[in-house]
Length: 152
Image 1: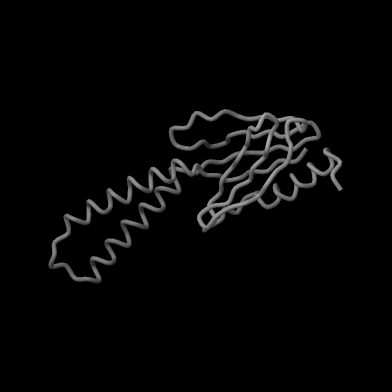
Image 2: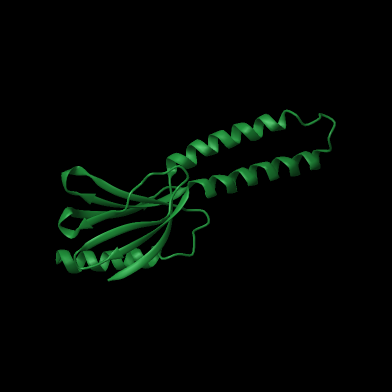
């Protein structure tokens, strides 16, 4: 059995909170007097958007602990997303067809394709990657998958 602690995020919560905070910051900027120094305005705008960005990351991030065993894969929440009701997940190796690592400019993902066309997917921020067990998990999962599924 191997265990990995991973920081993940909800792209839906991140998108919604980004939109709300960006609109909120933009609205607050309308209250700035027109005769302010341009450097001061830049510092205020930069501070507001940096604060909003950090708040989005905090709101949309969660921590999970993943266990890999000869029987299967277990995903246990150690810290959930804001307002989330997700449950712990356990999968047998027989339910897993294949897996995929991918991503875009803002985030990366790990996806397991399951029988009955279901998918298990976790997302990670791609900009400031957390120092967690994700890379070790990726190598460990590939090894377990090859061992259990007898893939060369």
